[in-house]
Image 1: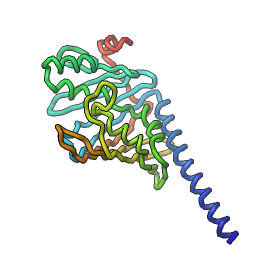
Image 2 (image 1 turned 30 degrees about the vertical axis):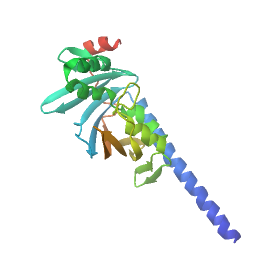
Image 3 (image 1 turned 45 degrees about the vertical axis):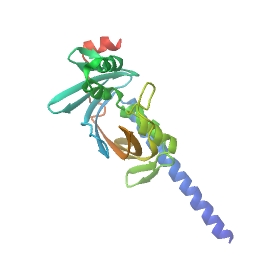
Image 4 (image 1 turned 90 degrees about the vertical axis):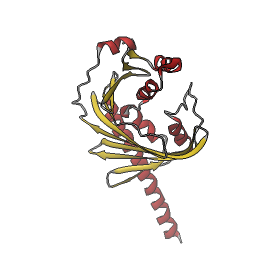
Length: 238
């Protein structure tokens, strides 16, 4: 019996160390990304049960500075520039903030500006990779992939993001939220992150089950050139 208990304790201890190591590996890789002078990424989102699927996003970011994001749909390219909690979007009327886009939409400017304005709420991988790890119950590593299920609170937060579930938003809070996160690590670097969120959302008075999967592919770490239009810098106030 003593040997059995000892073996059980050692097995449990080894598992605890393994889980801790997996999280530390992710945290260390996320710090490498955020500390990199620059990097590029693509973000592809697939939505099951939704009304539409967002176009892929291409992004470039520099440490402590600007991020430039572009999104193409139907032959049209939308460009946004972000810095910290500020951002502007290029429109026919020049660079505009999220507040200006909302004002134009409420004034009869249509929903196109509002839809394009969602680009201003995009997640920046270098800022979010480490934070995501804190929203996971536990992380496990297998064949270069570290994965785990989100906490209930973390799933609710991510399900609400981008649907008006933040200050000033109008959309009802999603229900039955759950999700998971996967990290692909290569030589201590994050090469890919995937976030999957499932929830019940209310669309035009009807509850729908929706699953949103976003996959970020990281590339050109340290060799990306970030070019920011001077007009965008001035609008942001940099």
